[in-house]
Length: 339
Image (cartoon, rainbow, N blue to C red; front, side):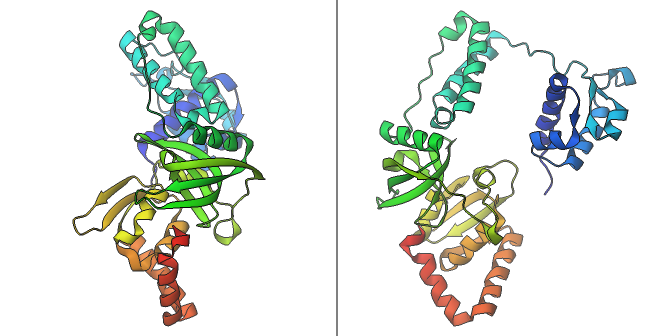
């Protein structure tokens, strides 16, 4: 899948800023820091080598030490002003102060000491630089859930302990579950707990304001294998980013899917069906989920995803027999244990 231009631009700017302070860095280390491949770092350096300030003569371009590149090391020799401090107007600074204060108040930041420290540091520096204008900014967010619940989740995330929760869906169905918490994240005005759910035996998200009770246990969280025994990449599963979008139409009985799986949007349809749009960050998990839910799936797009799901279903039928899988698949798809 092609990379989004804005994602690459952020990485390119980040590489210049990092190298300006870090000095020579190996291609492999740089790739690890920016979450990409050594081959992509080489392409990024090639792109930066012909980038610079207007004029675009040799003296206007970002420059690297060519001999270092040949040895597998990236050594920035001229940043061309790309790392100069940003100058903000008062209005811009106040807007950033407001955004940082709102970010600081979120459950996701409060539950992560490292993230909280970064936000606190940036906010302190920006507030000092802005002066009296910053003191006029008052940002208050509605709480994302019961304080006891948020405190238990935050503690469990910090200590890497399992949680026991009571959760109510939008249909007022209450269930008790044991989950291994992974992270808190926000989307629109809500906070969500991303976790491995032992009842569903799969990754799930829970809206924090619908968690009625949360109790931290002393049981350590476990690593949960995905397909072929590989550990599930929760960061990829619950992140949006540049992953391709899929649109799936479900029958009403699959409503739980929209509540417990990270989706971009939900659209209710006049006949009672609903349609979700989600990022395909884990194709294998989505494929197996749709095969399990086959009786409740009305349509899938894009066509390539639909063909992939149909192919998996056909392989299962060929292996186990149409009658056996059809009956078992329907039971598995509609069983409350899979909610």
